[in-house]
Each structure stands twice: as structure tokens, then as C-alpha cells.
Image (cartoon, rainbow, N blue to C red; front, side, top):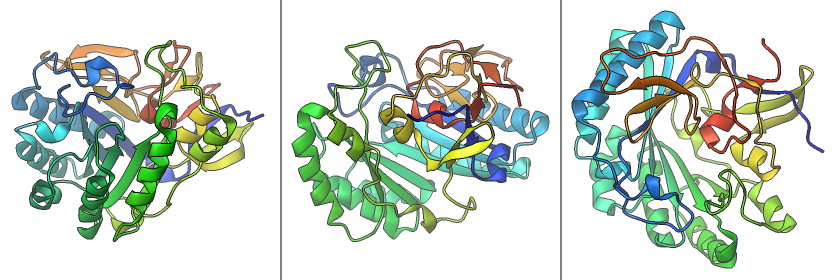
Length: 330
């Protein structure tokens, strides 16, 4: 049985890094059956560009001044973030503001990749890393493969994850084979799907063989194509009593072992990651319910400076799961 009392970072520089999740809106080009409606139904307007600029500026000021952060990743997501009409202006603002604090910022982009290849060739310069979620209910594997090739061709960090609902398991395997026939060796992994019809955070009913498949990378390449940060951005060890029991893992590994339960652990969500949701609320982590009680429209933000004691039973967001945490105060 897998036992651990700490999720730690592999590299020292990661402690000086802030991951900024920014949901630009909840309008999406797809409506996947396993995706919560609030992530794709367009029920709220896109954030104004002025509020997003204010938010990024205040984040850089707070974390650079109070927590000595030097490295930043601004992860734009949705919905489908490529639909945001002020995307170019926002990317330019992040880069320009970072220079004021002598910090290094990377722009990461989580997309379903649906935009035409022409769009990607015209806009790939905006991003440092592109993470493509291939959704088998809607996306053509040939198109997802071609988009990933364009990203890799431009020497950007490239990853493609294939969502693997059990009901479409064999079709997903077929689509993986098509995507593997690519020009470039970008990183690929299968993605566990959570069952939105049950209590949130529960896995679909996978067979033991399927779970074993989900714990492995399909292709472990692609992150070495960019040198903004020294190495793969997020890389974790699992420790027990200060000894490494499982090196070089990610959230998918923890989820597939059903070990994403951290209630009463001390978590650095809010210190190493901050999240802006589609309603403008500023939260500690990607899907963490712990809030700063601040909104992007407020004149002042209550941004954290220390770890928080986790109040929830289940952690179901990959970014939150990969954030450093332990059962004791360090």
C-alpha cells in the first residue's frame, strides 16, 4: 500500500515559484459529458481586460515583495481560453509587468486545441507552454496531433493529455495510436476522468488494468524544448518520515492510487499557487474551496503568506494535488 506524509518538490527553485491559475471565462467550444457545466456553459461573461491586468500586477507585487518569489507561471484556462478576445494584450501585459520585479514569467495555455492550424501558427509566439487536452467525444485525433506538432515545431513546451472515460476506452486507445504518429516527440499522458454524477472527486469505475495504464506516461518527451525554467516545471516526490518513497510523480499517479485525500494536512496552496475562477473569486488553489474572500473587482486583495490547514475531504484538481503539503508543519 502506498503511504506518505509529504508531497515535496524535487528542485529547490520550485519553492521560489508561483503558479497562477487564471480562468478567463467559462465559455467553451465543447460540452463534454464528464465536464461540469460551470466549466463550459458560458453562464458568466469573460473577465474584463482591465481587471485581469490589475490582478496580474497585484499578484506580482505581493509575491515578489512578501514571499520573494522569482519565477511565475501564468496559466490561462477556461472554458476555452483561445476564445478570449483580449488574449494578446493580456500576454503582453504579463511579460512587461514581470520585468518591473526582475522576475521570470512563463505563459502556459491549457486548451482543447480546437482552433484551426492557421490560428496556432499566427499566435504560438504568445505562449511558452501549451497543454492540449484531447477530448475524444469531440476532437479529431489528427487535428490534436497537428496542433501539438505546431507547438513543438516552434520549440515550445508541449504536452497532450488524452481524457480516458471508461465508456470510450477502446476508442481512446485507437485515437492515441493516431496521435502517436506525429512529427515531433511531444509529451503525452492518459488522463483520469472524474465522475461528475457522483460526489465530486470520485473516479469513474476503471478496471485494475485500466488504472495501471493510467499511471504511465504514453510518451515522456517534450518538456526539454524550453529553457525559461531549469527543467520540467512541476515534479514531485512522495515522502514518508523525510524519506523518499516514490520519486518523480504527478497528480495522475496520486489520483490513480486514490490517495488524493489531504484533510487536515498543511498545504501551500495560496503560497505556491493562486487561482482566479470564472466568477472573479481569488482562491488558494486550482479547485480549492479555501478562499481569500477577495474578488477581482475589489480595490484590495487579501493574498496569503503562509500555508493553510486543509478543510476538505477530497482534493480533485491536478494543480492542487501537486502543490507541496505535509501532515506536519515544516
